Amino acid sequence: MPVLYTVGLWTVAPAIKLGWRPTIEGAEHIPATGGAIFAGNHLSVADELFLGSAVGRHISFWAKEDYFVGTGLSGLFFRTLMGGLGAIPVHRSGGRAALSAFDAAIPVLQEGGLVAVYPEGTRSPDGRLYRGRTGVARLALAADVPIIPVGMIGTEKVQPIGQALPSLKPGQVTVKFGKPIEVGAWQDAESASTAAREITDTVMMAIQQLTGQEYVSRYAPKRSAGDAEQ
Image 1 (cartoon, helix red, strand yellow):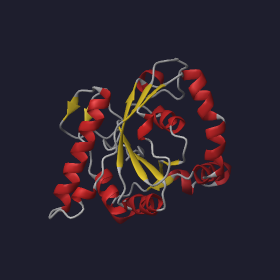
Image 2 (cartoon, rainbow, N blue to C red):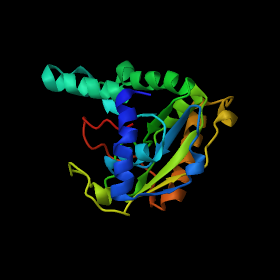
Image 3 (tube, helix red, strand yellow):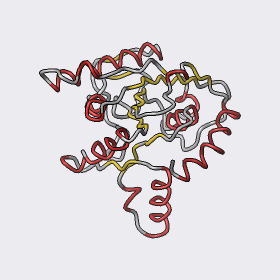
Image 4 (cartoon, rainbow, N blue to C red):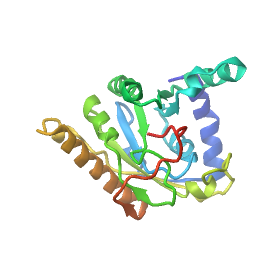
């Protein structure tokens, strides 16, 4: 486990549990060992903090490429931070470069690691749950690992879009883990794209059942070019 992430589990995670007192449901679905993908709805930047604090293992999150290539003291700081947290860089230029994060996540999962993915592709602009993009399914099929649905409730109240730091509001956040979705049944599907869509829709339905959000059958609008969520 990366050093800084380990430090965070011993310091930040207990502080979040003590200060915000989140409710955790379905913790029995968190795997003690082995690779898996956590696929959740995305309401706030704070989602990652609460997810990380609820899972006692290292989770590889995505971070925009800028944090890995900066110069000067600030660049050194962010490069060290991202490396210490075991983050996966996301390239925003599109094409083959944009797939590098996907490629980097596969060995992490195959080696028994955990990766977090937000299928909506960005934070929800209005609290509703939007159609999922199929990257989560393609990643699960490529690495042959289960997908664990995650439902975040209340994180947008703690840290709304545009707010730099989370507000201390105890008891406002609930993190729900659903039953793992095994993708083995789709491995030999005639159409890979059809299989990926079916898996993704299954994941989004599971998330919706956890959160109770209104579902929107179209993709969420992208916030900006600098948004690194996948």
